[in-house]
Length: 276
Image 1 (cartoon, rainbow, N blue to C red):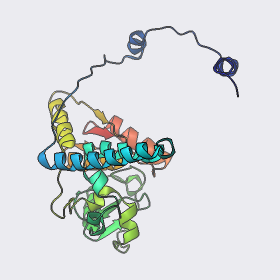
Image 2: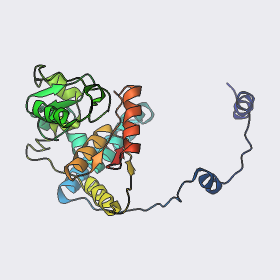
Image 3: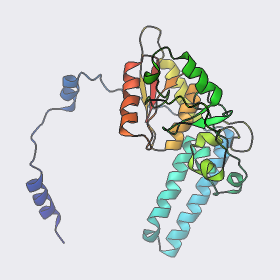
Image 4: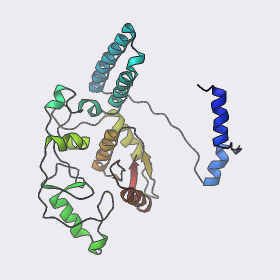
């Protein structure tokens, strides 16, 4: 095995050292970037979130202590990472943990619905296009009718690639495979406990902060980051419900879809939120 010194020496041969000692502040000036402002906001869970978090934390702590008692911590680092990740997810929104298909009795009782990605409600006669976005037949029909340009320039309202005009395709039917592989938004109508969907403290705090940024004088665009794609889906759905226009990248997008989505965000003043 190579020692640390030898690894550094080999690295220096493969990658020549750079001597750019320019401070980060000067680099920001060169690029025309605004100064960075970091604000920390502290919010408190509501009562339901407190109960769920305490329960999950206690269960995770018990499992970790079992690993310690058995002397198998190093053999279970992946399981320990999963325990920590679930705690972080619950701090985002309870659905990220509770709606894992087959993970608990609540999930096993849920029935999926297909959400229209235009009206953000349960889709009526849902149809899917080649870009895999799904809409009510009526919603996408009205969207096409409102387009004033040539038909060849018609684009998907979400990923902005060419949109076919096949409105006669059969409606999608919900099945277990479609439900389990789809977005968390496909389960959003029923809510965690079978009632209406509930937001989370973290999402509502985000909505409040984004409202503060709104201005009648100029457009302020925001990029919202999350490690969890289900959290991004929930954020986007909530923001659209309160009137924000958004775009979002997904792992299933083609390079063309990604480029068109970024371009749409950069060039349209009405699109102000980009969950990433």
